[in-house]
Image (tube, rainbow, N blue to C red; front, side, top):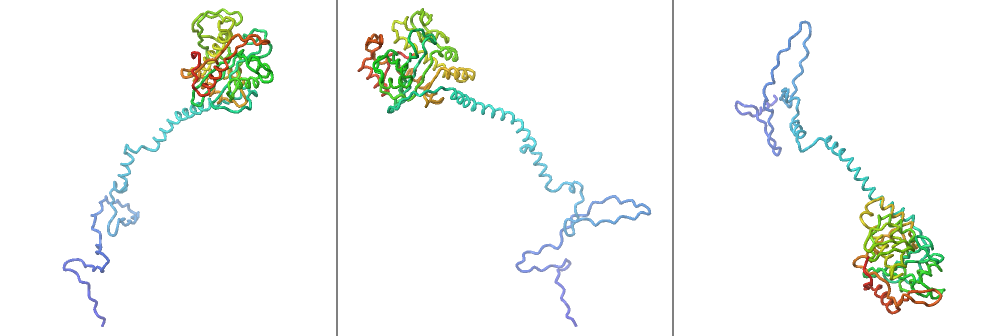
Length: 410
């Protein structure tokens, strides 16, 4: 006989108890509690002669548990309320709203970008155009460099042009100004009278402005270097026949003279005081000397005043910030100027700033110490003779940056 198997022990009046295996954890219940009966539906009306469709077994969510047939819970998943709350939350705007906001800002950003490009491109383009218009000349010497920066600014005209009427043939340097910036930053502007008696290399004693007629800018530079002891770093020549255009380009300049003038040679008509001068008046103002009791010395001072006022107006906000004036001044300036081969628009800008510094309250202006304004060595007429010791001391102080000048600033 087969041994009888022993039935599993069960508690009284209860379901069978499953024994747990040691180490396997608590035993899981055998069935999920009933979720309740499914919802009731109206019985389907049968049609005679038509077979009844097979009833699909109810779906269950788990073993022995039917799927909840409630319409609301059947259509919305469990996570739908949270998703709906996220969509309706005001803190998270729909992506389409952000796109519209960016599109509205794009025209403003594009306009700002265009304006920025123009603001950067305009001065660069203007500088390149001005640089291409500069006229250059071989003027600098090969002498040994000296400390600081030294510019030679010469004003010249062919005889009979620009309001000049005398019998001298050829072109001469009617204006000679040395602008020096010492290592300590002191800027000095010294005017050398055109009739100053000097020794011109290869030609002997003569008026310094004759060096330009005899050997051009290069010989003039050498003569100035020999007189002052400065090595000229840059040479700038201003055609005074173009002073009219320069003054007109900056809208006129204010000039001062404390005497009445009616001069037939320069055609200057002037009442004592300060007046706004147009181009023709500024040219006559810088040329007049026969009606000036100081003669050539007085004319040097007025020429320095004209040049400094033109520089001042060129650097003013009304010119710098107004493109039409910029173009007009660049055109007039490049027509009037001839510079050495090393100069460009950048060094021209530095010259303008150094010139303004020299003619400002912290600068120094004047002429070298003069011994005589009626020196007659013979053969060249009346000349200006510098005081040898006094002029040497002036140039030494200019080099050191301690010169105080001997004329009030314009």
